[in-house]
Amino acid sequence: MANYTAADIKALREKTGAGMLDVKKALDEAEGNMEKAVEIIRVKGLKGIAKREGRSASDGLVAASIDEANGVKVGTILELNCETDFVAKGEKFVTLGNTAIAAAVASGATTAEELNAADVAEGGTFQAVIENAGATLGEKIEVRRIARVEGEVVENYMHRTNKDLPPQVGVLVATDAAGADVARDVAMHIAAYSPTFLSREDVPAEVVENERRVAEETARNEGKPEAALAKIVDGRMNGFFKENCLLDQAFAKDPKQTVGAVVNAAGATVKGFVRFKVGV
Image (cartoon, rainbow, N blue to C red):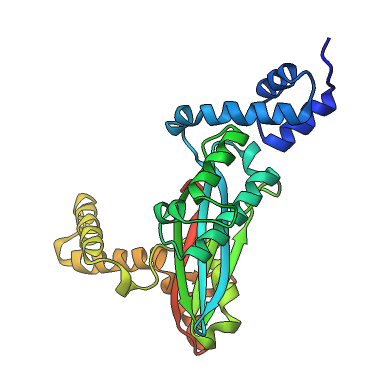
């Protein structure tokens, strides 16, 4: 007869993030001893690292931090992935997200590879921390990407797409000092409208060229008159810019104005932004 209860199973699942079957097997092997069961799950998890490497980690969280260096605000943001929302919403994974962003800030890492190689306060590298977490949680865990923005003002906005999960969308936006009053609203707009570029001038020439080509071919296929093609293509390019460029987008809080108009009215300049969404 099992010498553990349903409450023990629940407690071990919450503590380790392991699956129901793994938890029961560990408790059986440990004869109900909770500490030994945790150790068994961890050991088996370490053995399973190679098996997890090929699995997809498309759930997780976005974490961000805003710090100051040499009088300039520096925002750091990263995406930490796991395999399931069950692990993503667990306290251990959320704590790991806090550890990851702290390590990214401390190390100055600009890529996941640099962060993994960085030493952390717990001793060893962050890669070791990730591997230990994967062993305990029984899933593939990885930092997917890191980014930074700098400015006199840096604002962030973290959005939960599900109240039971940690933030799935994170935004950092940097402005000059005059942007302090509008930066938060701009960050919220970016979260909702997901612009790709800051301004028309930031769209790579090859992207513009390709969009113009597609617009012209589409117009020809629609049978538009040759004399009207140039004007039609220009109109469709304006539509492309309004959809993809932050400063050209209709402002979320007042669609009668563009984001650029709102920023200009404040006498401000947006220096840059980053938007991460888990799995995208």
